[in-house]
Length: 223
Image (cartoon, rainbow, N blue to C red; front, side):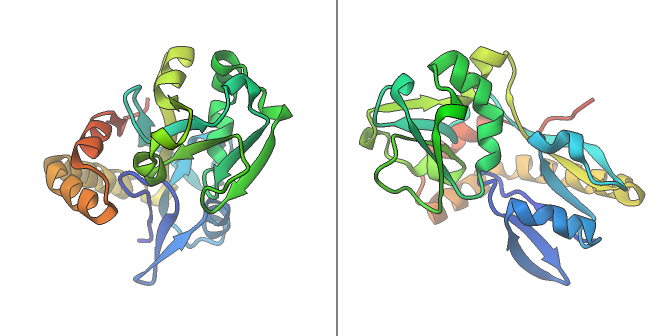
């Protein structure tokens, strides 16, 4: 069985096991692999919920960020209402679609009027960035004049956690996959502190930051 994965904190890239080899795959490549029949199950961005590929079904498990999650941030050198250029780290473009209404209603930012740039890392000359994943956990907020927790902002505006992704699987493998994903999440929760410490040391992120963030993650079961 071939799986796509989301690491515990960093949504990008997907990791796909093909013939025993673990390969990073950008979001733009996931559909191609699915349509070619090379993935049995994978997490799928919530922004694409209406476009599940034929032959696949949605599983009950997914990933959502509660209001205290720390890895979804807006950082800016100017007041939000004055933002004219917005940077998004490569691989996170789907985040902009999730947050468009929140940016408009809470911060007065009209996404359609912005100059959007996609980068592999932060670069000068951009008013603000939407950050998701490890980079948001590692960022020095003091280097920006304005820093906002977008998971909390989303909850305040929308009244619910931010749905990031859900699992899909081939119809003929859905039962097996669902049990495996459930077992995997149970194992992660059982040994969470051990995994958090290893991740913190490997990524140079304070353990306390990771622990607080992990408490806000929702591996939710959908109806």
